[in-house]
Image (cartoon, rainbow, N blue to C red; front, side):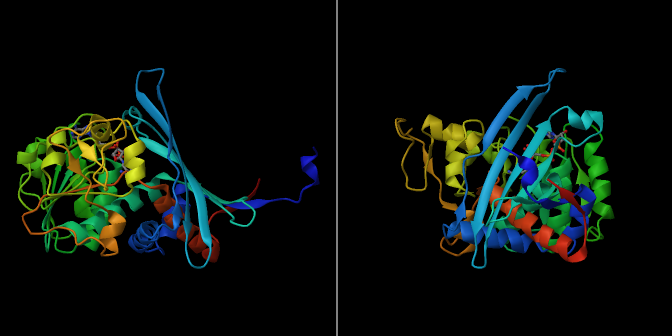
Length: 356
Ligand SMILES: NC(=O)c1ccc[n+]([C@@H]2O[C@H](COP(=O)([O-])OP(=O)(O)OC[C@H]3O[C@@H](n4cnc5c(N)ncnc54)[C@H](O)[C@@H]3O)[C@@H](O)[C@H]2O)c1
């Protein structure tokens, strides 16, 4: 077959700097809220993510995720794919733990129309989910934000949450790597919304969460350590790194919310998927996994974030409830934000037009 007979096909390429510049004109929380609503209404396509894990030649855990997704909005479908790859050894090399690309496809022809750096949007859309969870599920006027793990996601959360949750006036941070919490808190005080915010670095995770209204673990752990009695009444845990809570903390929570039950259910690696396989976590229908027996202390998933933002589920019942939001991470959020970033880049001529 002669590929040379086809006309030149062009797409827009956005570097990380281009993405950050174009994203200045985008309301990321609004894009994420709209995507959560569409998803809650069943107007999305969200296949299971592909996960490839390996050990690097120097012994670090590495992985590649491929996450396609589509949103079926009123005006036109938005279709794309995020691939994000990480090695745990990267921060010690002075490079980000995770990097990758997000691709947008033209709905009519399926041809690629944009390719952009993925990690910035990925971090910001994740922080936007936490902001929305906090808006709907935190106590009224949350004041203290605890961040466990002080890397890229912690920075994205601090930047976005201080802007969107103006009652937060204290940030407490802990990182297992010496010096990282202090560097992170310097970043927080330098933020435009960081002025007047009290910051505190502490020596352990328990101390970090003790007085927090909003707890955001953004570590790289694979085994839980946050016990139920560490959390004060009323705490919302945005369980971003997905493996920080112990099973008991999930079982004891008053409300457990996920972004997408199918993604959580089909994943064998993270805590909630493991609990489902062990019969201690039941789906929203109250049913255990097929072929698995329900354990005596099993609990049900209460709602999805889509149910919460559309008001189909009322959220917390009282101010002392401990609430867990477990955002597995949906490709449709990357695609939704990437689509708005692409539109802004097109309008302002940001990025480069390349040939396929
Ligand atoms: N749920 C989602 O949608 C979503 C999206 C993006 C990233 N993530 C997850 O967020 C996590 C953080 O990502 P990142 O890019 O900020 O990583 P990063 O490597 O930049 O930062 C992680 C930080 O956690 C610290 N840490 C590791 N173990 C710790 C422990 N036991 N206690 C305290 N600190 C500890 C590390 O020292 C490091 O500073 C990752 O697990 C990633 O997979 C989740």
